[in-house]
Image (cartoon, rainbow, N blue to C red; front, side, top):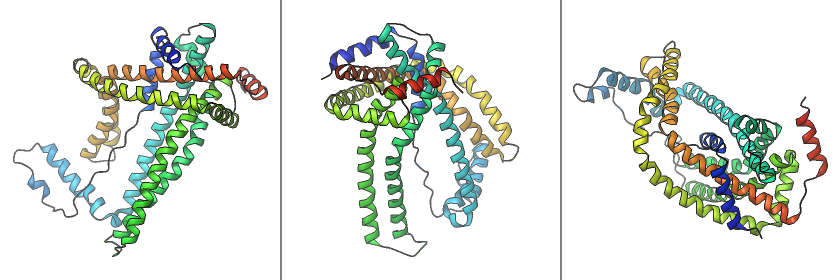
Length: 371
């Protein structure tokens, strides 16, 4: 069995003494977070005199925004079949935006993660600390691309259950849809059952695959193995040491809950810092907002141009505004990574494991002599 107390203590020591890792931690905090905003709900019966319902003395831009919403947005929800082309175009634009943002995040995340793995491993092996440029060079290799491919493979089972949940929602909608003049109680019950079962397995499978990833990703980053070899190597290590891995996972879950409580307290304690960062955040957001407004105003009306400008400026504003909180989240990201890197190293040492010779040597030769 691994020495959990020793690993937790040593992970903290590395975090505190190896402070260049903090920069990588902030990058991980920026690229590892996500949000799932809910879709807006609109009333089924609207009137054309809605703008007149605004309070007297409302600013002109509020009236313009309200009128634009009633004329251009609300019909998409009240009469969707009449605006299929527009809805598909909007969905396509949002998909492309998400795709571009995801690609940019991946370009930063995976080299950063690979660099942290290798920097900590080297620090434990030789005691050598690296600067940011040296660390980034360790991360900007084919090993980072393999981490992305590993995540892509591990996402397939979760994607299947997501599609099942979406299918359950579609079945429920068709079972009660007034558009198709159908009300099917059996279909609704079956859809709800399928949705809940799929959601349960989605959670279980996602948690299990995330645990496995801690070993598979480090096999690729530290041993230089290919994707298939990393999946096999990580699974074999976990299977032989599932008790140690499971116990460490439970400990990290407890730490995660504790960090969540502390993070909530820190969020409110940092309110004075947010006030200080308010002006720099506004300055940083002005340029991207103006660029987005200038480009959008060429082919869109004023309300839509301002909305797109706001959406373009908001990420820059909030990143600068909550920079102190990002540092705190970065500390946790690095600490968590250190724990699993040291767990991987200790399990490997206890088993006297060695990675397969040919894949490792081949990966090293490829990286030392890139094509």
